[in-house]
Figure 1: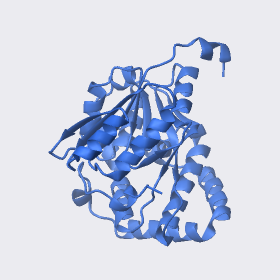
Figure 2: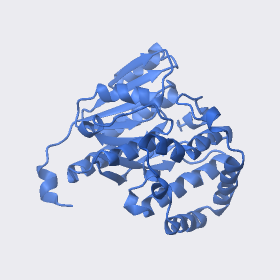
Figure 3: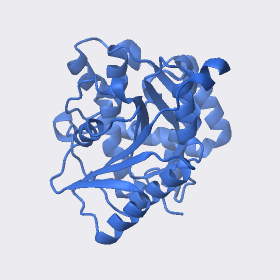
Figure 4: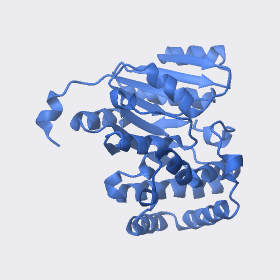
Length: 305
């Protein structure tokens, strides 16, 4: 890193946005951890919500945390809310996150530092890590999250679709506004590919970390897994090209990640392998699962300790 360039760059302005269809306690907890991660910065904080009504009490609590809340009654897709957020953002950086995330206190500062360090970076992801599991099933899903985190790190220096989770994505706003954003199911994968297609540079910020509650029951893992299984097919439709090479995970990255996770928690990892096989054998047909608005996975919202 060129420190001389780093310190001369103008400090960027930042918006943190949460598109959500679940205005519950997890949203408030996420907002609280964002406020702590802001430290003394005065970032723009926005929530674009639909479907679940926001109570007067919750709205006031979010307002106290300096969040600007926009709510509409009709359910819309994740990307529909993202488009509204993008249109309303005039800061240098836009961080898009979700309503069931715990922010590490250094996540935002690490993201901003990465943008300042390299003006060519247009899109940044954070590491997605599991909260401490509360059930046996969740421990298996936590193993999966850790495994993905490891493989994402070993694959192409972190520049790969596994690293680009919709749980936390940050963009240079000017670049993001150039991207066409259609209605797709696998929105995070689309943004990763569109960023590259339109000349952007992706970076995984190793010091930026967010924590999630992993699914605590099979039903809350089954549908997201099925949606992802049609990701390649969906993206090839929109980008009109063969994406096999971008989806093919290097064997070495898989082996390194697998061995490290096997040493860390072998029982949970073996359990996850059976879940992985099950979701492939009993895959839901595309016409039933590939919808841009879906039912909320409630067990992942339990992030309050």
